[in-house]
Length: 135
Image (cartoon, rainbow, N blue to C red):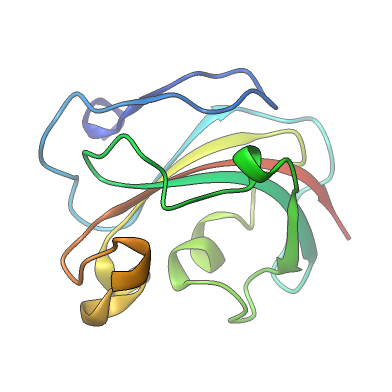
């Protein structure tokens, strides 16, 4: 599975660089922990603070990046405040971890996509997520 995933720099806190080794996204929802943190584990229902970088599979330009804004985001996880792909992959990982997540449309924005962000209904999303804190 990891061989289908994009290549991402591992350094926690650094702006992600994403290199696609395959034109085709892996099937289903995938998560690879690039760096395991040693902080508390994120649990469903927690409020998590993260830095993230999101691109459409195969694209260079992010559709959204808290790294580029220099402003982490905080939200409830596992409770429907974010897309299903995040709710199902972030819990269970520790603060200090860097994840790369591949999210097919059914776990992202569905068949409508988000046209104003350049996300089509068939697009697989890739997020690099640094878990900063949880409470």
